[in-house]
Amino acid sequence: MAWAVSSNILGGSRYATAALEEYLAIARVLTDESASLSTLATSWASTGLQMRSAMASSLCPALRGEPTAPNTSHTRMPFMRLLSSCERCSRQCQWIADKTGTLAELLIRAHSLYAQAESDSRSLVDSTVQGSMTVLPLQTALGLGVWSLADIVTTSASSRRSHGASALSSTSWAHQGMMNALGSAVDPLHALTSSQGAVNAGARCLTPITRRIADSRQGDTLTVTQVQSRTPVVTSIHSVDEALANLQRLGTQRAQGAQSSSGLDYATIAVQHYRKADGNSSWLVMIPGTDGHPDSPLGWLQNVEAMSSDPEQRRHADSVRLVREAMERAGIGESDEVALVGHSQGGIVAASIAADEQDRYAIRHVVTAGSPIANHPIPEHTWVTSVEIDDELVASLDGASNPQTTPWLTVHGTVHQQDPADQPATPFDASAVEGVDDAQQISHSLPFHQAAYHNAEQLGSPAVQRHERHFQQIVDGELVETTYWQGRMATSP
Amino acid sequence: MNNFQTLPAGGNTLGAAGNPIFSNPLFGHSPITDIIEPPCQCLRVEADIGPMLVRLAHSTSTTMDRLDAGRQSSDLVEWTGPAAIYFREHLQLLARESALLRDHVDGLVRLGGTG
Image (cartoon, rainbow over all chains, first blue to last red; front, top):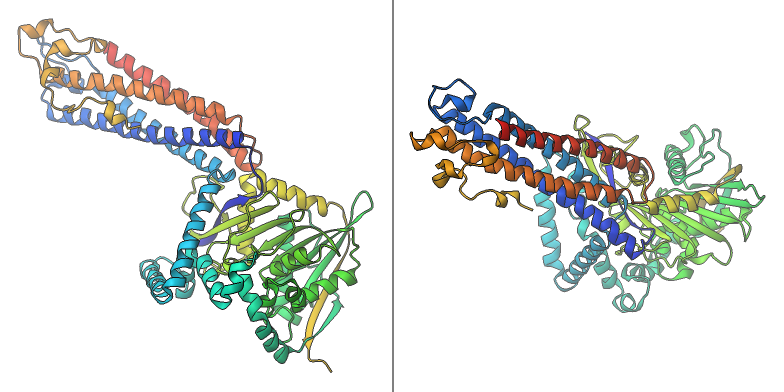
């Protein structure tokens, strides 16, 4: 059983009301007629069965097309041929019904025709879970525990996931509501007044504590060093898909540490310089996720600071400082267009820089994979392409859904295991997750996001295409140079 | 739409349908001889099935008309990429299958009418 991801697209572009109504009407016609044809298929089959039953139970040979006695009146209907025709009509109706239903579903998914309804129901669930967690925290936690347990018991035979991963998956619908309730519990007053969400308000409250812990363990002195790669890890790119592939390669090399073929180690980011046809420079910054090494600026505790609703706290996060310093030393000019691509904490850092460094850099596009950035105050002129997996938890840590606006597109992936022998209804139902073991437990790793984006791209969603074009305009040029920057934390001498 | 509702209620309880007077003229049954002898069971089956086939053929034809209209509207959708190509190719395939089904249903009605 291989892993596959099916995508839904939210935000990115708004259809004119007339166009949306027209597309919805077409989808409804196709869906309704699919159901009608399916009913007709049953009716044809049922009529055939009635004929077959009459032929079997009657003694009259005329029903079976056999010769009858003279001077008696018999049917002249060719029952045998009619029976065969009824069965054929039934099969044809069912085939057309299935195909029509599949095409309607494809149209609905590619154009996100029910996105508003999905978003409304999601908000309702979030509010309900948050309210329940606030008023009856123990009972709600117990209920969610029972829910997970029931899922583990019922799916343990068919799923290869661990119990923990199954529990995360089965309660994914409640993650945002739970996180909001937790954020409100940490800082109830600020959570009510903050425009950046209860979780980010909670992170603001926790940051002085986490910073003290991080400083005592790692120190507060960040050293950023330009390092060389022995092999080309990050290559010239022209699309979001390729940028995510680069980020995955960078992350893999980092995980292998000094033993990797490139020699690149943890807490290393890449900065690419492109020269456009008009001579202007543009830049692409790639930021991997948390590595958790003791002296890494991309540690666990830095997540809290980068999530804070306070811009000063975000700016002080070690991971944000690493990227900012690398961007400055790489020579990014104030008017040079910049795109930032990050996975997990890397995405939070990208969103923080896009929110807080607009005076210093012309940040045009941010691509995040598995990053909780819904509450980061990213200005509207910066486009955001977010890829999130339903059950990865990390992307839901912001306790909110991403804005559904033209510059903000979210690709939601749903992970499932697919039997290679099963024929999907269309080639676009899901995209296979490449380079992941069948027994992979957590859907937060980047190949899942790559598969989700690939599936969304294959659907030909106009919203995805617009974002893709916007991103491509930034990296549309010749790659001049790729530089790698490594960060290390130390105690001040 | 539930096409079962368009079928005669209690289709298997023949009642008056056994009387050749109620036979569907489309299916060409002559009631003359039945006045002399009790009708054969096959005539009752014919009287039962015949109208049902006519109604089903009509429902199928109407549904295909609506589907064809929806299919033609789908050409207006602005959509590019692999899924859009697949969608349009399969709409054409649907059009061919739809035409085949129409032919088949027409043939079935003719078969019953001339049998």
